View 1 (cartoon, helix red, strand yellow):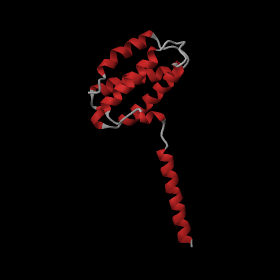
View 2 (cartoon, helix red, strand yellow; view 1 turned 30 degrees about the horizontal axis):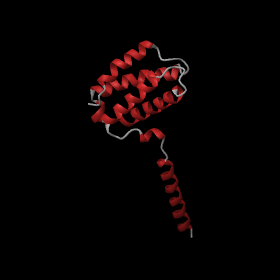
View 3 (tube, helix red, strand yellow; view 1 turned 45 degrees about the horizontal axis):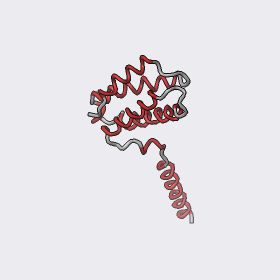
View 4 (cartoon, helix red, strand yellow; view 1 turned 90 degrees about the vertical axis):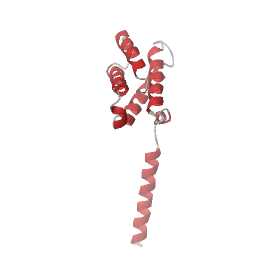
Length: 129
């Protein structure tokens, strides 16, 4: 009897871990696992968040999505040795860190023009290659 209870407990634990592990965030669907496509998707999302006027009703949602996609992108690719050696990844990581730092430190302030210009200069060099 004790043998069956321990097996049942193990089965319940495996099921619980599986269900918790499968529950992902909504941005997981935005990233495909293809570095080139994901880089372009991140740049597009960030441009949308940056270029929206401050009084736009969707600005807060766009900034939230930008923060999520930054976290997802960095988490997915920071340990991928085939990607971390690319110049585009280094440039992308620098741009993402700058924008994430602004969102963390000054969440209610507009993005300074100097940071916008810097990001626009760096985005074309992150073509995913």
